[in-house]
Amino acid sequence: MSHCDSSFDPATHLRLLQQAEAAGSSAQAWLLLEAAHVLGQLHLGPHWQTHVRMLALAWRSADGSETMGQLLRLALVPLGHLSRRLPAGNPGRATVSAFTPLPVRPEIAQLIARARRQ
Image (cartoon, rainbow, N blue to C red; front, side, top):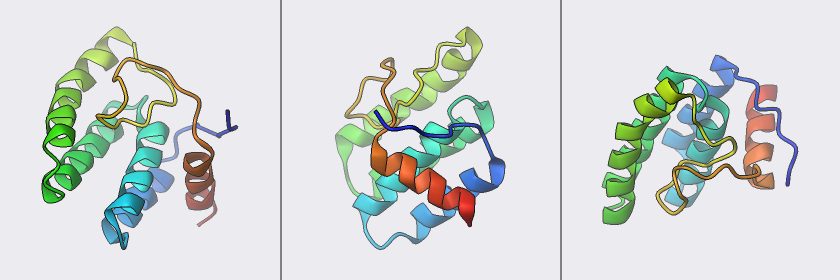
């Protein structure tokens, strides 16, 4: 388990989203979006915005299972916020249960820390 300062900072969240858009590979874009998800998931707007970006990347990548997973997560975002049941540390991908809290992976914590310093 990696330590991660998960306190929300709108500028850091925005930087992660912008870096994901500019990433040179879909693998790097996914990591940056996962970092944005971990950082923003407790705030409705940023949480929604991150899943919209994840859906767009899944669509561009022609990844049907990830596209369906992101559509499901977009439906669950408002419910999670209303019920206050949001799994901390969850990276937001379709390959992980939408209900499972997880430790923040070291590479995600590093991306968040780097974006905070910019």
